[in-house]
Length: 439
Image (cartoon, rainbow, N blue to C red):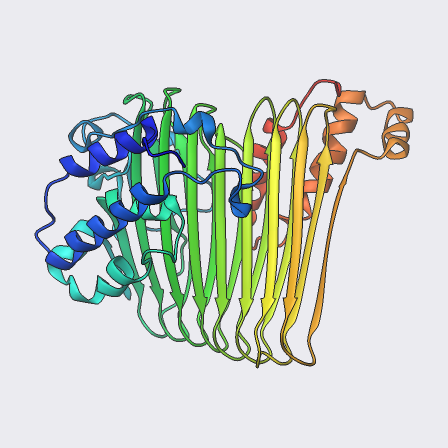
């Protein structure tokens, strides 16, 4: 990068300098270290292989001030904006990155759920590794360093050993639209105890159309024999840029499942990193992006098998219409000693427009013995014979296209056990699918 920082970097540095001290020496030092790392690297450029298909030149010329937490605390938000059927457990709501106690509801017995600021005040030392040592210089990209330097809010969730949480936890990120050209940053820390179980629904919405940037970094630890169901629904406005990085550590005998639906946003990048650390750990992931207009969505999935008899199954779908662009990279790494691993990855995509684009890159690295692994990716169009069949039965072209596209996408959502939520996601997908003819 050039010596002169971009407007994006300059604005971030100004925002960091204006932040008050946390009062915790190691946390302030970690923020400074991450800020220095971000200043040194700047935003990723095209020669960075991990960002090859997601150019950030236009973003680098934008100057985002830090969203005002005092303003965010007073913004009126209608709870109907984020209401979801089948999701009626504890709720934690952030508006422009600021925790809103008035919109949130506490957890139940066996759950420790606290805003990050409160957890740091009460018991800061247990959070030291995650906040100060987890992402050191050279171990993360620019957006993770930016989040670590500027995130002033988030939450800490701990589920005690043996506790099964009956109702899903709802995590809501609201971009208010009331603070134009601002950025917000949130950090999430989750620990699921031994033989414990919890479902989490993370939900991105917008209350207005002003341009905003949001970053979220989450770290999840799933202890032995634990169970985690994670659903991520991204339905932000077309003026929103989102960058989210999630890391999941899965210990022996534990299992995590991810379902992701990407609908909104102007530029969205979601990274998922899963480390299968213990014998017989399992990670299943399912996801869909459905894009239109000039939307850009980038999904990065990396699954690392590090122990014996681990398993992973990834099934992802992409649909691009208009002039949109979708990116998918799925990497499976089977480390030395991870004998008996079983890994599968499938990524299938539909182009609904001649001007849309999808880039897919499946990767497989195997350094162990007696491994079963398969991966594949396709990019195509709707099947003309199926369209002809539906139209011959009197179904209009628009409806026929929507039916086939929905069936294609639903393969990635049908394993979601929450019936009410699964049906709602399908309805959102239908509403988002294109209604006009292909270009």
